[in-house]
Image (cartoon, rainbow, N blue to C red; front, side):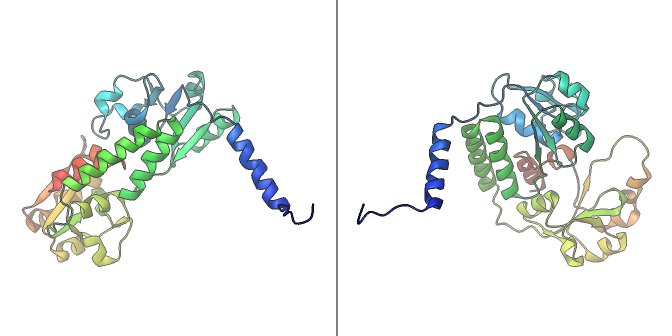
Length: 270
């Protein structure tokens, strides 16, 4: 027909794809979800609907490293083995980036859907992980509510106040820089991280002498575990004892995972 404009093949293909997407119903939310990662456990427990989450990792029930150990006590646990998870008949398995590769590969070969969540090392990444978990569970509204609650908590902590210089120092003489979750917590609490003095942005070793030379206003160490680990002996060094009266031994459970529970870690430092 003269004067008419015919759409290109590209546009026609795009319109066809769009109509198909509109006509195709969204996939139903998974009904039998298994988490095999400590951090995924917590996000799943915060967002899952009634009866949707059927198993969490055994670490979720350890109060030393799990911020939701009491809640996790109400769930059956798994130990990250493909055989036991397969027998639970899940329609979704959520694993972490460092979850056992062979277990994940076997589950996928058996036809089980497995989604991998990377560790969240920043405030923005925590928001992204909450959003992603909400999408995986079909609980987008709950995820949006949780993010709003998290943001309100951050705003109430007064992040603009600066409190001096601090050193993060752990077993084996390790420290954390600004691009780690611990570094994010330190910054949100109002402290300057001395790791930046030595160009450390991730997790790396820091000689005791450099910690002392930096003269931090506060020293922050991880909680000591039972036993006689030689890796923790450095934390008892007399030089650290004399360094600053402001030494904080933090609860690992609030620092391990990028979840809204970092608000407790930030508040404890303030």
